[in-house]
Image 1: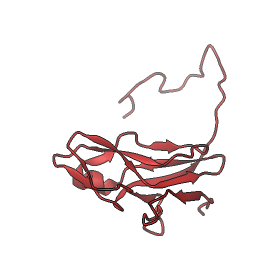
Image 2: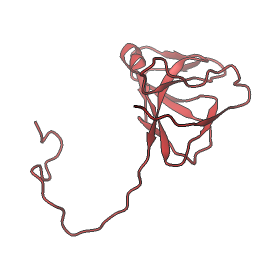
Image 3: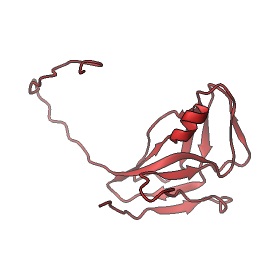
Length: 149
């Protein structure tokens, strides 16, 4: 059974036409987030741009929202997100922006209302450090990248 949380959202001025993030299928984990650009934004190959979404949110305490790439944009166009996943903390009240990068060979055009990312919600746990001089051993030990088969 999935959990449902209430998230307060506000559309910024001049963005009444922007669709709120929404689930595109019944079992989708992420809501599609759309671009709120004033005019077309062209992202050249190798270039990155901050794309506005036109919304601000207020998450309940103890939750975060992650901004993730859309797999279709990555596969078809080589477009993804620079800081993936991006984290929106419960106390952040600024406009959500999506840092897109074009790894493709062609320019990529972002138009107003284009689905550009996904937003996934998670519970957050906080850690406290327990300082020690020795960690309990494991079968892996300090084996690094590519250590396990």
